[in-house]
Amino acid sequence: MSFFAALLLTGAASYNLTTPIPPDLDPNPPVTIYDSEDLYDDEPSIIAMDRSAVRHRLNSLGFDPITEMHFEGGRWKVRAYWMGKKRRLEVDEISGQVISDRPDR
Image 1 (spheres, helix red, strand yellow):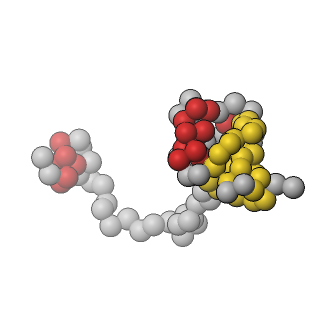
Image 2: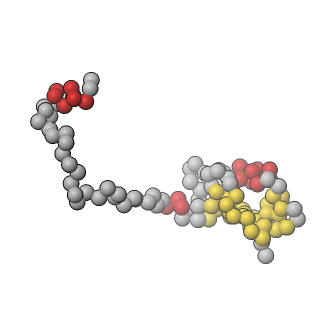
């Protein structure tokens, strides 16, 4: 069924299809930013990689041994060695991507 046939069947035949947009209508309404408790929680969300999966991913990237690992602020915080040097990592909870890799002092 076409759009115009639907208008006729619903009794909207008198509806003016050329009604202009009101001048006070904001064409760019403010965007609502998603803010979740998961971003600040100390526990991974239900879709996050678990501890063993993150450990396996980091080992496959060459980080060995992993000396410390905890979840904080929506990310895995990890201390590990890479090529004999101690590193401090932040890992994305969902993808397992290393977001930050810094020397640990």
